[in-house]
Every structure is written in C-alpha cells, then in structure tokens.
Length: 273
Image 1 (cartoon, helix red, strand yellow):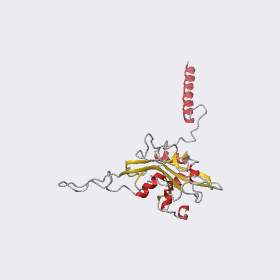
Image 2 (cartoon, helix red, strand yellow):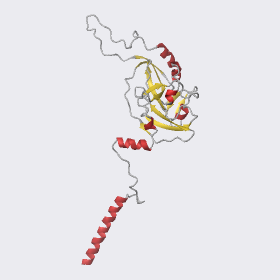
Image 3 (cartoon, helix red, strand yellow):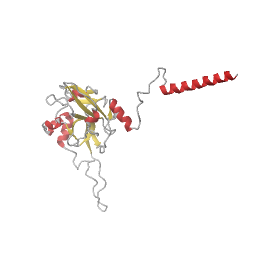
Image 4 (tube, one colour):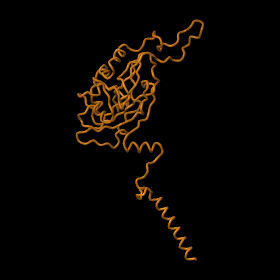
C-alpha cells in the first residue's frame, strides 16, 4: 500500500497542521501537577482518610483545530499525517484513506477520527478512469464538547473522491466538501464547520471525555441501500411501476376488477327485469 511505501517524516513535521499558537503548548507539555486544576488528585488531609479519590479531569490550555490523519490498513489505526494536506511532493495514491477530525485537544494527546478508514465501504463500486485516483475521506466534525460556542457539529460522514492523479489531498477534499482556509493554507473549516475562526486557543478548559466509536453517513446509491438494509427497510422496487396516472399497477388492476364486477351485476339485474 502507498502508506507503507512512504518514508516516515519527523514528528515535528506532523505539527505543521497545528495552529502556530498550539506549537508552543506541545513543546511545553501538559500542565504540571502543581498547577490548579491539574490531574494531581486530592491532597491528604491530616486526620482524614488519605486514600486517593476518583481521578480529576485534566484542565489546562487547549486548542481546537482540524487534525489531519492517514489510515494504516496494516494496523487498522489512524496516524497523524507526517506532511501537510496540500503537500505536492508526496501526493496521495489510489486507495488511500484520509481522516480530518475537528477536536479540542488539551495536553499532548491527538484525537483521530472516531470511525475506521474503510476504503471498500466508502468507495464501494467506484471506478477510476485512466489518469485518475480514488481517495476515501472520513470527516469527523467532533463532539458537542469540541464545538465552539454557537456551533453544533454535523454527523460524521465518509465520502469518496475520484480526482486527477496530480491533485493533493487537500485539493481532492475540496472536490467533495467545502474547504475554508486561512492565508497560509491551513484548513480552518470543512462544510462550514466551524462557522468561523481558525484554530483557537482555549484557556482553563477541561479535557473532553474519551471518544467513542461512531458510524459514518455514506454517500451514493450503494451507501443508501446499505443504510436501508441496516435499518430493516427496503427501497421501493423499480418493477412497481405507475400507469401514468399516479397509480401503481397492482392498485389499478384491483380497481379494474371492482369495476368489472359492478358492471356484471348491473347487466344481471337488467336481464332479470
């Protein structure tokens, strides 16, 4: 796979996508245990039970931004992309899966997309012509805890892009989603989310709870059929055609039978009279 054929860049290169204000925080590390609100836990008080209480949620300076990840099919995990999404030296290849996740990050942990990068499901039955490539995208807009004030995250979705071989990941993404960037090219919003801003610093914030897996909303006819099957529904068969008056053939036939029976009864009554 293309993912394994590429050389792994330095860890520092991965943070090119993080807002410049966030880089200092990553270098400084998480808040120390001596800071108020840190995860140091309650202190023992003389004469009282000094056994540790429940863990205290980490608080500190956080950053909200669109993280950029690549799916590793060998380990079935997301890895922070080693180069920028608009890098022209390491172009994505057919079959690659990329994830974009909006998240509030407190400390040094990354928060990848909450759904797997299943290329077969996202790009089902999608063919690429000569000179084109197929890229699968997992777009995770995050949780309510990640959302800026006044915004509500859309449902995560998976989308397949069929694009020219020379396009970068970001250029390919722009063919299937609305991408908003700043002057430096940093991705600030996808599909209008968040509504404004571009990677903000948030002070004295509590780290969000652990992420839970989610299902992706898929696009395309195959995805709709799969969703209907999962919900126990079924699409209306194409064979149940209309007679042009808005009636299906079964209903029209039933009406015809009823009319014929009525006419027959009328003829019998006339003959008897």
